[in-house]
Image (cartoon, rainbow, N blue to C red; front, side):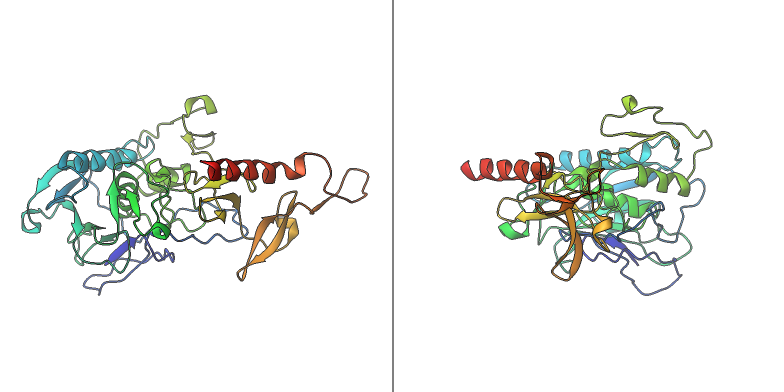
Length: 347
């Protein structure tokens, strides 16, 4: 049974059925993930199974040879880093550890989760997480990485995407996403900056769990101690503290803020306006203009209504009289973006 891969953005949760045929639940790719115009609930979702008590720490092993561009030590480092991302969440009892290398799949014990590179095309997917039938969800579980269609690196390569003909992906970020599937999390379909977002984020930011990822794993495997990660923003290196939950979040940009292939911090999506150099601004789907912030309008873009920057968008001052344009603020986002685009083109 396929839990998730990095291409198809359905992210459907499904229960584990014994002796069931393989079922694709979701994939990770370079495509943009969906986001409804309104979301007033937590976004994490589950695949339908839970590891039994006493299963932790899950043992993760690497099988076979790494790809040419990576050393064995780098693969071990990547698995350890991705495992720590989930193991270090204070309100969860879930834990993973790297337990070394195996030459063949026959050497993998039933309690071990193998990670391996595939020498066949995974239908274009960057990676797959698969588990087999039986009473123990670990029976046949494995993470498969696509070495045919993608290059692999120990760091993000945001400008090496499909449009360049040589897409390169961050091994740590992809493994963090896939190990979330191993732990029973499905794709987060309404939060496109999370580790469990259905689409691969080029800037490598999926290495770092969002508060939503952490809340999901803590609900699935709560820690008896219930420790807090933060009590204020000063305790968090990447973003704000979700004080009620005591968890550090990642920085999430507002609609209109700059984004690009190298800065993927939009909870909705990054609307690329200069594909050649990969720059744009954060946007979201919308139903009407009221769903968009000042200086943006809800416009149809290839059949989808999104918040688009509109210099001529009217604003309503306190007196109630509408005026077009005006002041420096309305053009702030466009001016900054123009400067960035111009600067990149001059390089």
